[in-house]
Length: 431
Image 1 (tube, one colour):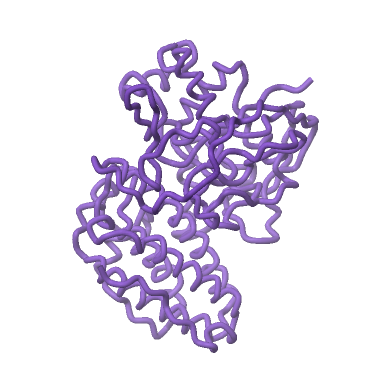
Image 2: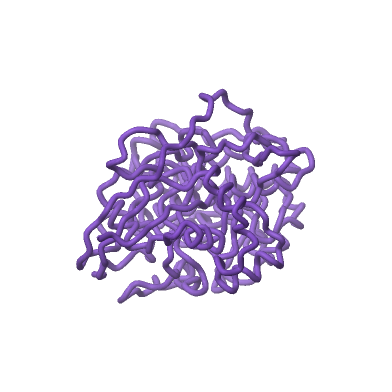
């Protein structure tokens, strides 16, 4: 496979124009190559299921995004690398033309991985020249969108690589297992209460945010309490041992139909050998860590567990109010753990694991905020047209790039999907 080398930065590239923005751009672009480096060309081409995309496609699509929305519109001297790539690597931007069907991305054996890398180098060079020449506010805005868009695909790359390796009979490891302290028993759940009232939610617009996080608006909350940590694998085993996957009264109708149709008996990537549970991870097949957060569960499963526990899932606004004064940091991509880790035992007077380890399903449907208007043009297709039949997740996961999330961030997936790093935090009424 061709070496995945970062684009070289010259002094002019980091000092002229908006140097900070250019450094962030080049750092983000390099990180994508770094994440792809352990893979073979064959690894990069395979699509394990309809929801997942090949790594090669992610690398090319994020490049197409910059080429389409930054370079073709604002770099007058830009030469398109290959006009056919618009069909191959458009995702869902209908206004930008026809595209390869999503379930068939794995059929793109051509262009080769090497040609995709050449495409990235071509676009990165043009971006570097453009941003060195004192970019306009519009160029800077679009570049910022592109950076955050690529960060989302970095998370998807790792999520999809796990799906690919989990489908292999060899259960290969993406990275070598790291020596860790022996798992400890999770401490009991504690509850932190929050007052009700009229509260402001949503992003204030004073820094970068996606359009679906805005506008700010008021909501009425009843007093509520959140569990101080995520639900663990050990607690999920209790749900399973009590027949959780076999009790229809715990499940929403669509969820029960999905359980029966798909034959779910445990979270995705769990394997039972004799009397021992193992879990597929980016470090290969590992013994199940009972103190680590449960992960790769659907909204249907999260909701059923909450009912079994006599609790409920938080609404997205309860979660946001609880998180608004917390630093958006934790076990995210920078830690390179690449799997959820047990919560630090200790004080129970604060919320733990709100950012990192696993995205947290909420009870809230993904819908527009009052007064929401999608952006004009093709970028208006990014979020708004998906505001139906999906649920909101909050927080971040162990493969979310550092600094990408915030208390107002709204992730969203369909309720049956579970290949994402998604887990569970319980809520209840307080008072």
